[in-house]
Image 1 (cartoon, helix red, strand yellow):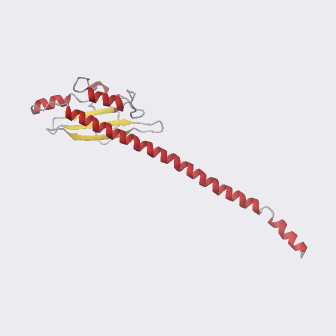
Image 2 (tube, rainbow, N blue to C red):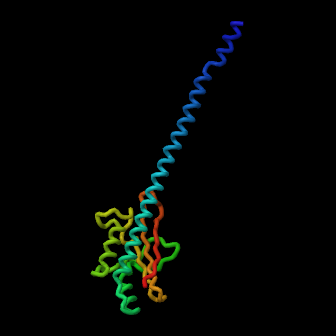
Image 3 (cartoon, one colour):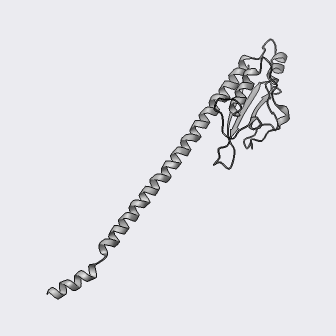
Length: 176
């Protein structure tokens, strides 16, 4: 009977080592999954932060425009509103590439200076934090006074180091 037990014990030798290796493998996969999930969470939080910043900047730009136009008559309103256009070409579409014609940049005047400062902030041109990877050429203020509704379309674009395409926030408002 004793010889039978020794033979059985020899056949079982090494199973504990295999069980320990399998347990370590499962544990390692779980840890790797947690690390990957943490990276995704940080990336999503950063994206949400930039979207919130872009929404706040676009809202501030729209407020500055609404506060600084002359409303004596429709012609004067349209003319002063047009002074806020920044890189208005090409006209905004749902598939904007965030590459705008830089020849139509806004001119800084006493009325437009607040908007110029906000655009510089969005483009990381001031000491205030702005949108990553963006310059003035990735920001657009499109003014449509032809339709009679004084539509203002503000598009702010940014791209982080890990992004392959531009991210953008677009605000459409009407100034009366």
